[in-house]
Image 1 (spheres, helix red, strand yellow):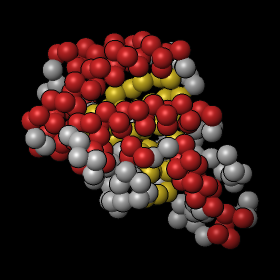
Image 2: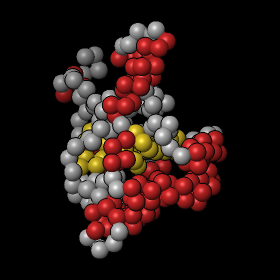
Image 3: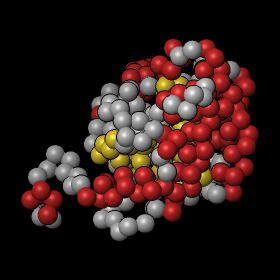
Image 4: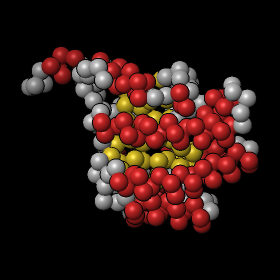
Length: 238
């Protein structure tokens, strides 16, 4: 790929546009979700090649239960199928799989599949793949605060950050959203406070390695100041 100034350690992606991709081809929406899985597989392979250590994807939000029952059922079937087919390859490729989100209202079959996939890849270090499934940013923050309150621990920025569901990873450096929509949609509301945001017009099934490289090049051109001035960043004593 082309030369980069810097590479993000952790990227997060809102994989938007599967349904629209299928509709434009006069196909059922679930066909777009299946194509989206193939896109995710390509991006997972591409990340370690580019020095990315963690990838977090928004697969199913807590609001997605409001979609038509047929589509929700199809998404659950795709998840179960992906787990059975892809986990052995992820294991061989050194990818650690972690699922982030509420599990209480998932079926026993799905919960067992998540647990088995996490256990099978627990020792892998090539890439951490966080799949946010039945996840919402507000749920994440509220759940973390509730756990801290239950233990009597003071709720501070530091303690809350440590209680969130992605505490095992540094906050994402770059957040990408495909599908030409420009909002977070309740994704990583706390963790994305200082993430660089990149919005792609491509629908998720059309997002490929070249599109990822364009996003990474844009990230490399940006100056991340974290509240400081440019002069402070260039002065080590500041």
